[in-house]
Amino acid sequence: MKNVRKNTTELTREDLKIVPESPTMELSQNPAVEPSDQTRTTIRHAPLVYRVDEIAQLLAISNRAAYNLCNTTKDFKVIRLGTSIRVSKQSFDDWFAAV
Image (cartoon, rainbow, N blue to C red; front, side, top):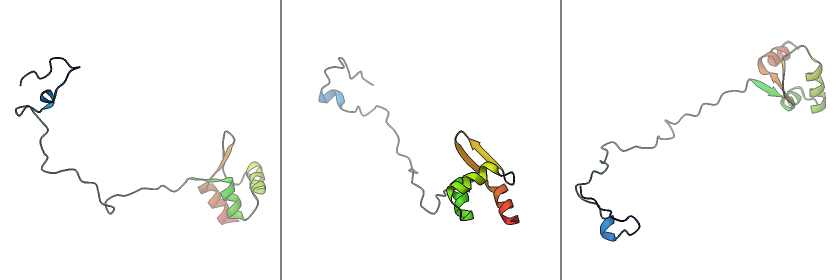
């Protein structure tokens, strides 16, 4: 292969031509194909916790009453993350089924 560039700041059309014996990428016999919609699967995991507004909707009570319940109950597991309150779905569902 011959040295094409002498001065990189002054390239000519001749410099940009591809030398025939230069190695290039080979064309694949099995080109990449995007998967069809049938093969593409999106896995969505069910949430493991409820938010307080979801508790309020499930119990048909106000948000304030749901916050009060979460702050005072020992019947189901309440998780506090900073200022956020989450309720364990498993423990709430067990409690709600027993009520």
